Image 1 (cartoon, rainbow, N blue to C red):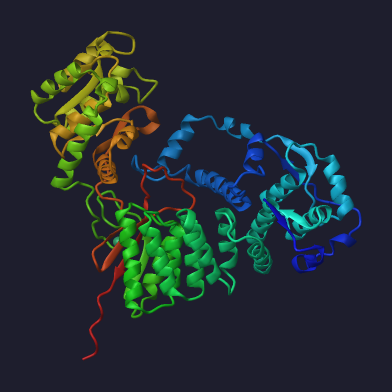
Image 2: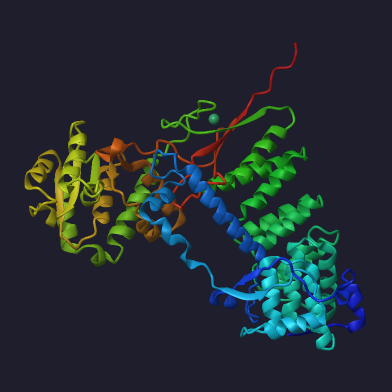
Length: 585
Ligand SMILES: [Zn+2]
């Protein structure tokens, strides 16, 4: 697609502020070396419809830095359960070699990106030095977007291109210029480009619309962004980012009704809103004293609960600030942690139990038996004969209290003998009069340096044992034995069983599985000086947004902690509402 500028004469309107043609030869005191990899070429190719987003890349870089910082600050903290936010990251750091991290640095190309506007001769000269395969103009503007170059420099490029092509500037060049204007928040410039595009094209593709929406939002022409959103809707469901921008714009211009109806529409498309969209409603709510609005904010909190979403740190601050801004001053917020027992360290209330209700337990048990253990692909995990043999074995035993993944536990202290590790854990549990099941493989019974016969005999005296074929997968047996024993039964494995969660058909079953796992998986930790194993109790409380009406407890993610999807936050916002003090007699 090509864009015809209405003539060279109109340039002063578009590029009114830059005296680029009067500039002398380019001198760029700051050398910017451009990093070029094959990947980036593809990413910024002229044909690509996905817009290069320098800001997004910068954000990624910033995030990477943050994560690095986060790791450093976390290093001393020992998370007290498997599912503590950041624990997986720590575990993986112990395993991976940090020296291998920076190997992917891109190759450096020598062409320097100008740092100030160039005149025609200078652009001609720069083009002569360019040896890449892509078109020079497209490559330079892409790099400018990537580097967030100043708009004046980009403008001088477009003027040069237009001068060479009788006022014609390619569509891609214009869109990339637009994206620079948007990242620099140059609203008047955005509006100029918007006018040009509107004059030339009846409708734009969604990439340009997305940029225009974001660029128009701060201006008093923000309602036109809603029309662009309508344009996007004609061809596709707008992104949550599109909705975010429009909602942000509506709130910025005090149009609460438009903001809520866009929110309804967003949720109606089954899109999970960006947390910053939800945060925007809370931030705006501080200035509003309106029950209807307040109820909608409480609905957002319940939405977080139902979707197991956790606000980030600054969102948590916004929630706290909103509650505390409610007239009458009934609400007081505290950032806090929860004790192992499930008691809030701030108010002393006990949080919701992690344990499933009997109905939930039956629902989950049936799903796992059907979808994970049988699941039509049982041959992949075990043979039907072995599964039958196992079922008969389980039914001949009393219900178990603890089911142990023997192989997994045996390998937890790599320096000790495997049978010795296993015996240590089994003896510890047997002393508490617990019914223990050890799941193992047949090869563990063959005496070797790692598996001593006398130790394995002691294990068999203190626990029920089932040894599967060496090729079988242990997890289905572990799940079956644990679930079959009842909701009191816990299990020990280092494995987090993510695959099984993925096998489950629906979000409810997955959520219940995660909740059950948090409440039933005992963690084994290396003891002092790594010489023995210590068992850690599972969580007693559910990490989810919760309320009792006059109190709220809201788990949140800290900015500097990277949490895996199967971990839960450890920090909480505790909100207490004082009941209204009785009026003076
Ligand atoms: Zn509390």
